[in-house]
Length: 109
Image (cartoon, rainbow, N blue to C red; front, side, top):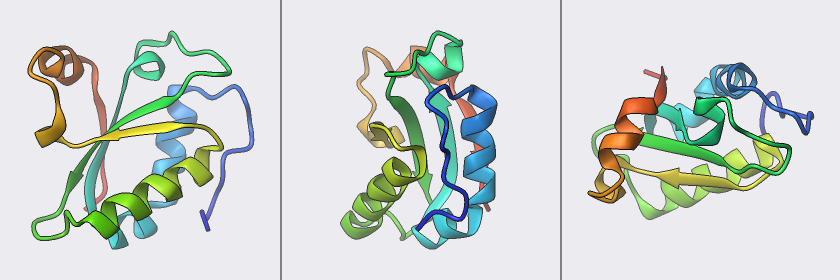
């Protein structure tokens, strides 16, 4: 259960980053070392129905199926909306440069 779930339908980039900071210990236990926000929230173009796009880097040896799925479920519960979770290895070559240019990272470890 998230330490600090986000209740508002209207989230800002700072709301999302603050929630990540508030749940840092849980995210680290799930293997995350850095989480970056990209997409409509990072660009300031989000709406009440926008999903949240996150780029997650896992600590060495911690990128497992269980950690990935636990992290996805946790983040959706935390934010109360759809969350798309990508890893650097899963980035499409066609979108990689754009995502890397706009991502806002929060270091966890």
